[in-house]
Image (cartoon, rainbow, N blue to C red):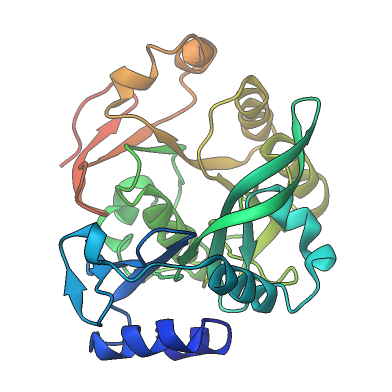
Length: 313
């Protein structure tokens, strides 16, 4: 359960006052967006809210409460506990994860070295994303991807913001804890972007189950290899595959006897297989289940297919 009041320790008092005046229930707010010189905006119950300069809401951004540079600096300093240096590694990745698994996205002037970001020197915008879990959302598909004897290699396919990470997270939990008449299995999570476990100081803040091991903020290919070598997983789970190294790592995991749970951006299995990088996966029949989600409807299942692209009811 999310409690917006925990953010009052680092948000400017004026912003806290405006949020309280909106009268939203606990758990309603998904995002708080602060950009210098722009109106304060929230995402609540799936809708965008512009906070009026006198409080309340408005549909005109010109009437919105303007975020100042001082407000942003104050907020950023509190988020970093007044030690930006201590969070340097996270900042260069564009976000900071705080206790509770909440993520603060950062934008501003980046300092680069070659093609890599070394730091974000001047932060001009923050997107405070309140962590949420939909415990139980995976129950509608778990029996299609696992039974007493098999855990099928499964790819969750969906466009952005359709809930593929949320669904993957709950499927991990269900496989790890076990279900009725089915025991739990050891799951290894290579959490490159920190979206699945939302680790804080290495400890997952999201519930991924009792038998789940998470390697956090490491490239997927390296994380998969580390998990296989050291943690003996029955299942490997990764979010948003896409590179050649990801594909090779998944193939190696299968050869090591692991089942795969993964997600990818796309609208259908046919859509993703048009990409050259997936040719060898298609030829090898790596995936045995494809879960396709509806766009603009978080977590809603559009279809489930087997390895032959035949629908599973």
